[in-house]
Image (cartoon, rainbow, N blue to C red):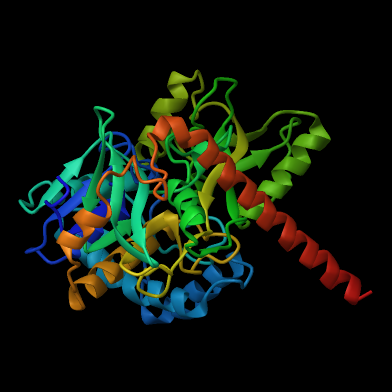
Length: 447
């Protein structure tokens, strides 16, 4: 295994799969995932994917993204994402992805903080549609091997250069995967939170490894809370009620069935309003009503949400459903440049794991899939364009005996996961505290 691959990708969501499709076909690629093939948050994305509808929409789309991010976004990253969107959509369609159409024309929907409808969707399962079609294409590639239930436990690093990763295989053995280049596409941090829409195994492993290897991080205190998840007293992952539901006209009520907020506010502001109302009402949730939509339209537009709510005992065509905010997305991450390169040589990061600054302090709805695809392609193209192999013989000799070298400190995932999770949680809180302190000092200067 250790000599079998040129490039290693960690993660089987849209970022990892799209990167694999754009890497040189003559290179041998390993893709690993800590869980099953479909256990990525990309499969869970309901709402849709943004696209620049026309040049006339550019200024509006740019401003919507910047405003949602409190103008802390990287302006260059925002421009790259928007300008790349039409090509990305064309590629997806060529790969078999189907978006909703009417009379041959795309059906665009609108979500919170968007000034116009510019979001393409596939029912309320857009992420599943895109990810499954990408996976289907990747599985056809003879030069790609996918390892499921395989956890990254460390990177193989010397002098700020990544030479691959160490993994714990499904049978518990720890193996090296030497690589000329490594791409982290391992998702977010929802597993660190009690209430999250994310899969539980997504615990910021790349962040923990970054902390141990002095890889730069950015904005790691910027954690997005989604305003509307289905309220439940059961433990585990929270079921998302897509922002597109509110984009199609659903309204939020307090305990007295009174509307109390503009439902299309940016996510962070709407979350604050919901928490404020819950505190005022002394309730654990607020109510979401789709009463303005005909029942047939609800079932056609949101079949997955309809089915799940029915399973939980709620008929969304006839009654309100209880919703509550929950952790949803990570705007911060491993700091990368405009092509996804980290501060460590031969190491790239894309998708929710990475922070290229495009989202600022708060992500605009339905920009996540697009951003992941744009930077996955950019990383793959840069790797392919300047490809330089490593000395494999040196790698084998230097990293021989992973578990016996004291400086490597490589342990099985289960033995080390709590310490890793705690280190990430502490770093997030430290960053949050430092930012808050800086804000207070800035306010005091103006008094």
